[in-house]
Length: 304
Ligand code: PPE
Image 1 (cartoon, protein in one colour):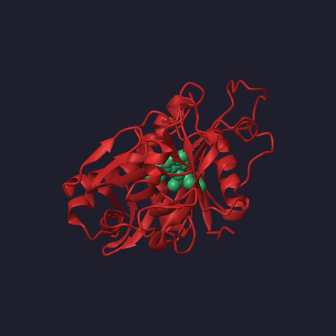
Image 2: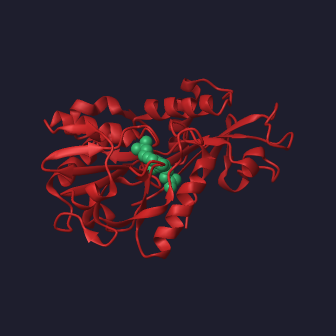
């Protein structure tokens, strides 16, 4: 259950958590065209800071551009509002959810001149994939649902309606006793988790899926950089489900999931069934960055 904070930014001003409401005929609620971000703010060595704020704001605007939604604020205004939302709620570590949606006006698929509305909420959000997920790893299955075909959904956009596919896969996985689902693309290659990008490690080499039919993850990008700085080879190349089975290590990345080891896929242990050394090293490096303990990546943090 979500832990309420105090205030939510809606269309330029703060309203109380309880008053942050919309009309039931809000266009996005019916047809699914809304775009959003998931951002984390971490408490670190030098106080609280938002991780890769500019990149998240840019992706929000890119998503809106793909969805042909004109955000009635500029990037700086939204970035400032995000930081202000953390500040007014007096949260030292939290998850931040900006949402751009089509408001009340005409009904019918065509959004016409309905207003484009913006909200920013922040709340405390702990480990995404279960209590021990970060230390012990998770159990995943390959989903019976296929990830979006590139001309049915444009996954460079973080678009609300696309998440129906994730919800289906997640429900199926949870009902079968798994922590997460990994979806294959329309050609049968590994695409992504319901809310994460996927990495495999084999014989010391790292592979992650190319960006064709997956979200361009900001955590994915951060982890690739951290790996390359450590002289690890990272290839953005398609791979199959059996390549995951025989990998030495598998992990997933995402703002909510952070860097989570995957220890079992479709009842096959990955490696020795424990988080592997490269996974652990990258996870450590990632948390050092977000907590402000790695001066080389201070520019990825925006102080609150
Ligand atoms: N793929 C998908 C489909 C996805 O939703 C996310 C983020 C990622 C990859 C990783 O992207 P990034 O956060 O930039 O590293 N998923 C968000 C929503 C999770 C949710 O349940 O809500 C997130 O992690 O914030």
